[in-house]
Length: 77
Image (tube, rainbow, N blue to C red; front, side):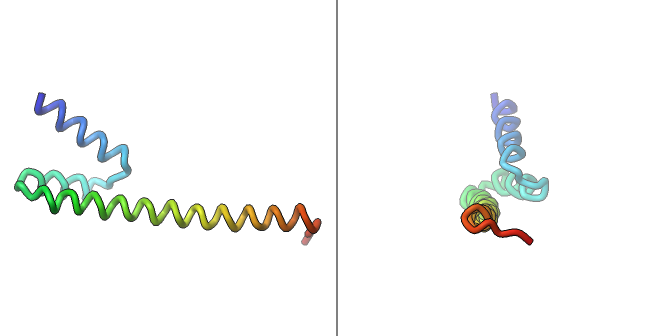
C-alpha cells in the first residue's frame, strides 16, 4: 500500500509538470518529516505555473484585440 501511495504521489508530481529537481527536493523534505517545507515547495511550483497561465492569458487578450481591430476596421499591412 505504501509503495502504491508513493507511486501515485510521484506520478501526480510529474503530471503537474514538476521537474526532477523539485520532485527530489519534495521527496527528501517529506522523508525528513519537513511537511511544511514540502508543501511550501509545491506552493512555489504552483505559483510559477499560475504566472505562466496569466502570461498566456495576456497574450491571448492581445491577439483577441488585434483580431477585433482587424475585423472592425479592415486593417491590412
